[in-house]
Length: 217
Image (cartoon, rainbow, N blue to C red; front, side):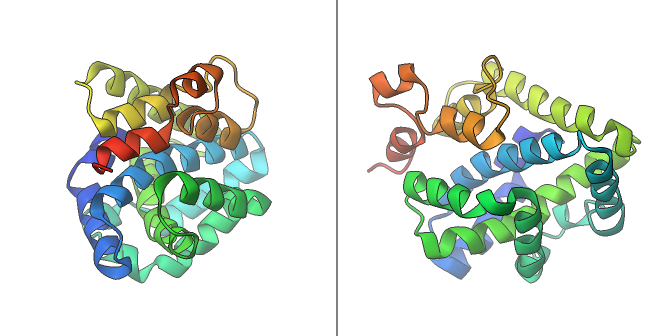
């Protein structure tokens, strides 16, 4: 399963429906949030995996807790929300409030709900990574390449697919920051999708405008 399939297929739709029912947020908004959060989390993990100790810890966590079974039973996402919060605390660290604020401002999801929704999504994203790790028989030393490959393949796939609001979001997220990386995944990904480069500022672009069209606002 590609990252695009995760975001646009049954798994993404089912977890979005759960979040919609629990938090009163439109399913469309949750899917758009997932489209930004998944590459962001993967990018942060890829950066962390450059450290051998972090790579080993991630490898162990994936083997122990994230075998991919959640993709076949997304009802686990709600039950594992508190676990998802711990995952996000580790991945984002001190930047977590900044990540949540930026995502809240640009998706229209209120700040009091953005964290809990992300906490539901995190175990699903980790389950996806764990399943890819198993299928590719990757150990701690290969995690960086695996995560980079997931992002690269998704970028190519989003560019090849017919344009749609969600593909526009994915293309912007996955295509942003690669050529002029600041070394900070938050700046690179959120900067590109939220209109952080000059071209998009001139166009008034970014996630806000895409979501505005997506939601018919």
